[in-house]
Length: 142
Image (cartoon, rainbow, N blue to C red):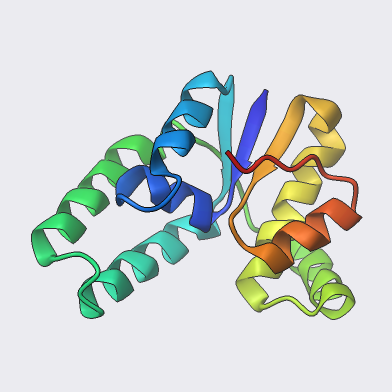
C-alpha cells in the first residue's frame, strides 16, 4: 500500500504528538511513502512554529529537521507543476481549502488517479479529509 502523507501526518514521525506511535506503525507497514514536494516547506515552517510557541525547544527542532533531511530522499515526492497548481486552484474553490491544503489535495488526487486502490491518504486535518473522501480517495488515520 502506498501511503500519501500530508504535513499533519508526517510531522508525527519527527515530533512526539498524539498518534505518533500509530503513525510509526503505518509507515512501517506501507510499501511506499509519498509526499508532495511542498511538504518540505510546510514541515520547516511547522517546526519553526513549534519552536517559537515553545511546543518544542531548539535542540528538539534541530533534531527533527536533521531527521527529516535524512529521510526526505526516501519518500516518493510529487513535483509541483503548473497543472497541479491549476487543479489546486479549482479544488480550493470547490472545497474552500487553504492554498497549501489545496495543493496537498491536488497531489494526492494525482497519485490516486495513477495508483487507485493501492494507495491511501493519511491526514489529520478534518476539512482536507472531508474533501479527499468526497473525491473517492481512501483515507487512513491510524
